[in-house]
Image 1 (spheres, rainbow, N blue to C red):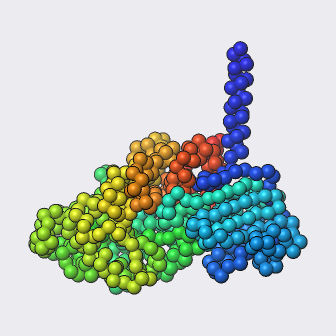
Image 2 (image 1 turned 30 degrees about the horizontal axis):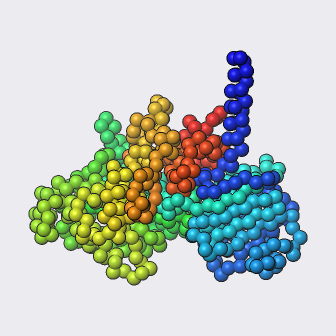
Image 3 (image 1 turned 180 degrees about the vertical axis):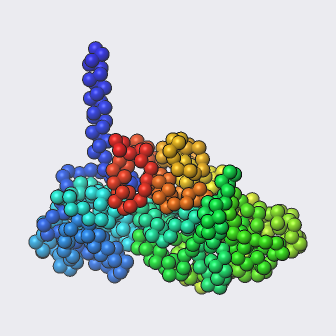
Length: 563
Ligand code: ACM
């Protein structure tokens, strides 16, 4: 009896394992997917049939895809257009060209910008989308259906036949905002590392790179009107950010991005449908700026100010009552607008101590003038002027402003509600508060979406914040927009993982802590809530380690079985 039971259990286990093993390893899981019969083989004469559209963006995305496939597989593809093929009601049905297989693109303008349909059968692949982003995401899925060197963008001479399993997918994201933030104020990694992150984000269909470029410990972006921000503010006298027993090490440390660097990264991101959201965190977390221009940014210019060597929250904030400080912020916004041709600018707003304002006569007078007794309202008054400044710009230079959720601690009425709140502390409640005020909101809960925090309790883990509780499973199982009233839901733009770098000096450690947890956040942002399932995710994740290795990014190996 015992033996029979054991055999039965073994069979059940084998069955479950087989079913899991057959799962198509697409991350994030598509909204609708069914597996077909057989597979498409990329061999012989394969014709790529371009859609008949004026949209140069679509053509460019298809060209890039063809180029990548040729470079990574060594298979030459033939390009064609519908005019050369036989059309029936606008749909390519028969092919005048003799070919072994076809990859056919079709435009359906009724679809959403990021939606796509993908059908793979043994002799034909059909891709339908409305916009370049939809085609791009269809190609990301298609590349995930192939050996991992294809997504990694490197050739693999060892693959004998390039096969793609037959599937039918209709896909669209749950949220429009699927973000990742990197803090380069504390530690600076350089543009090649940023490109790797953008690649991995794009592989997982993430579309917002929030670049935290300024901190108490460093200002990392060239601003032409204020050269001392990078001559002084980008450098400090310690590589480590000191804390407790960890003292400043005296090593001269720093770096920043020039205009040319920014342009290069912006182009790279645009090609991958990642919008960059630059953040200058003002008026708090601004000691590096204050050290650069104490004469008009400091509340106490008579005292010494230096780029901070320590971790924590500096009290050395910008004097928001000084008109020159307000002009400074407007000028910085103007240059950010020139450098980043995207929709959003983040002005920070977190953890801004008011002590220096409380002791400053100009700030005391301004608080009276605006009729408040809450010093947080000085911060709101500062932002109000910046928002009005942006509102005066021509349409092509309009940007939406984003703030961390502490801004809700003041009277936000002067700011209006056409701003977005990034909810991190008490995130779920803060997001509801923002939505009730009519503001848009993005969920980036500190626990568990701060993926710089330790992901395991092992002693061998790299030094970072937390106690090892933010495991891959815990990150995956966070439920965004859970139990939110239906009328507030349209205010929820999406989700974002954040990475703070106080303890993380090297890019390899950023990657180790970030991966694979970023993939879990990507799935929360894309996949319908009812289709998310951790065991399925973990199963589909197996093999991603190969992609990471081939792309040259480090990762945490704990959840990869048998490695
Ligand atoms: C934050 O974590 N201070 C936004």
